[in-house]
Image 1 (tube, helix red, strand yellow):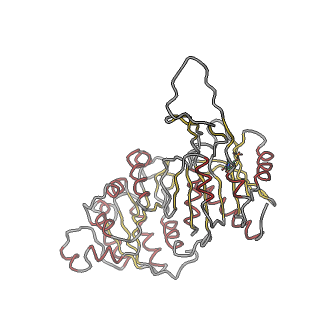
Image 2 (spheres, helix red, strand yellow):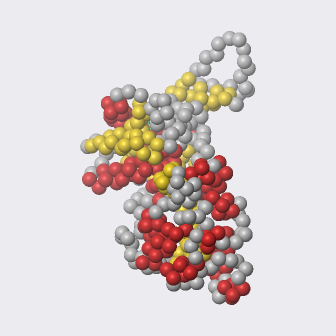
Length: 404
Ligand code: C5P
């Protein structure tokens, strides 16, 4: 186990009924080795995969399964157990328990504890890839995240059912590592970070607008990662269906002008990340009433929008500025010129075109700054977010007074 061995958190490990339940034994072992106090609560279904006795032997504590167990309740009852926990981790979390938690049910001890506790709840989902991808599971996932539940994984890879895909439980060592690392102060602790994300909408009339294909995924992933690393994060987002990442303050805007006002209103900024696809133009005079169709052609008079990132780069004191460039040709050359022109410290360039970059879960990036460059091979946007922030911290360390 790396780093944090002096760890004495009280962790309630919930085990629900999936084949990955056997891996929870390793998780409990790791947490105990690191100095945590662990109590295990299993669902009835989990006991079909691993016996309570196994967890009792590993944790050194009685294992609870049922809510209405008079003998157990006469010891540490379920409310006392909910209060005892400093955090609750459910690994594996099946599709079923995710659904029950999303619905706020309390039909067994584990779901009851999740309702009764004030401790943060974390889930390590584990299920067949079809079950994971099902809209019902995805909706439950989004709902739980919105409520502040944090998710560990799932990973993608070979599954016990013989298929390969997303839904595999994160490895128990990695779960333990993530839980223990959270106690250490993050490497962005104390920083004020502002992220713009998603596209803007520029109204034509009350029902129509000019927009673009940006999904907001990259900006949301950056906000989530910066928050996870301890920064105070404000996410200024154009319209997006994505859930607000845990711990992030979100300001919703629609137009570029609103985004600019929201950015300007923020006083303290150590790092600004312009990941929004801001519309370059807005309609000069949006119609007050819905435009009527006529046989004649229609022209829209467009005015240029303010350049938000360029304005931030002019601020005094000046934050470190990270921007993006989506290019269809001569990527490095165009991105380098854009970095200079807008006064960015670091630019993340990607080639766009059919199916690339916009509205996709992954991307390929070329990072360029004053004294270097780094190519990031195709990866999920969450992974790219980690690499971008690693690069930022590295530049800050190598050039503490970094500017363009
Ligand atoms: O000029 P272009 O739109 O390609 O530049 C992209 C970068 O500039 C992105 O980081 C984007 O968030 C930012 N930008 C901005 N305000 C604009 C246009 C772009 O902040 N009006």
